[in-house]
Structure formats: C-alpha cells, structure tokens
Image 1: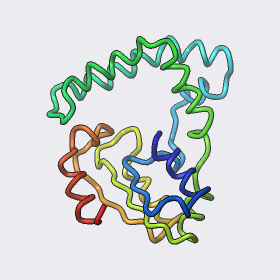
Image 2 (image 1 turned 180 degrees about the vertical axis):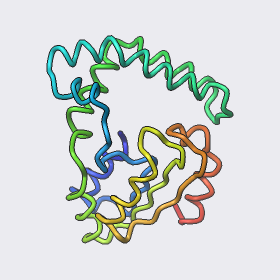
Image 3 (image 1 turned 90 degrees about the vertical axis):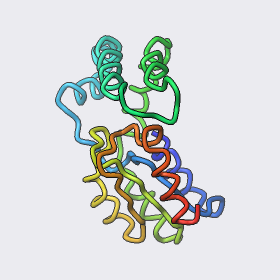
Image 4 (image 1 turned 30 degrees about the horizontal axis):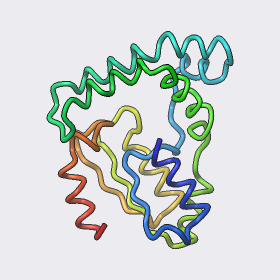
Length: 173
C-alpha cells in the first residue's frame, strides 16, 4: 500500500521528491474475485465478512512463507499477529475501499510529465501484485524502469532484501 501512497504524494509534490522507488506497487487495478468485490462494495455485510474471513486468509498467506529465508527475524509471526490488533482488518478494508479502489493512471502520467525517475521492482511470483502489471505501468509512464525478481512473491522486501539492495545500488539509489 505504501507504493500507492508514495505515488500519490510524488504526483502531487514532484518538486519535493527526486526519485520514486516502488516495491510491488499497487494502483494498476487489481483483479478481485467475486467475494472480495462483494466485501468491498457492500457496507455492513461486507464489513462483517471481512472481519470473519480476512484474518484467516492473511494468516494462511503468511504461513506459506514461514520456511523461506528472511532478513527480518520472525517476520511471519509478526505478520500473523497483526490480525489480533483491533483496527488491522478494518484498516485493510478501508484501504481497499479507498486509495486502492482506483487506478493511479493520472498520478503516473503526472510523474512522467514531471520527469521524475521511477523504478518499479516486482516479484515474478507475486500473487497480490502480479508482475503482469508492468505493462499497465509502462503504458502510463513509458520512462519508468522495471526490475523483476524471478521467483519472488509479495514478501520480496524481507525475503529478497539483498537483491533489492543490489538493484538500488545499480540505479544509484
């Protein structure tokens, strides 16, 4: 979600940013299943379904990464614990209904016009923000640079930290 927030900020204030690095960036228009669309589009019942279903779905996704090497000790335990915080699931739903409900095409077009360098780093096996969204971002900002970490899922920031640092170094970040 940080990529969407950073993109919106940079588009609004390009004079305050000298480059934008996006890691598994949201904002290209995610394909949602019928249940998630219902949850997002239906107040009250959708809120209840999110509270009931999302924590289990989130923990299942976290468990899938449990055995992978990580730069952050116990990161999957910390992520699973997030679901115990009272405001966590409602905050995720608010983000899905808010900033993540729209595409960031106008913002990326502004970044291209402003000449702000953009680097997007994608996980080749990311199921949350698929690398297939590269094409969409490339249409909106043809000057954006793209790097794909093959085999990386959505946890690329903590599972592939060394590779990300090498990419950033290559781009002079």
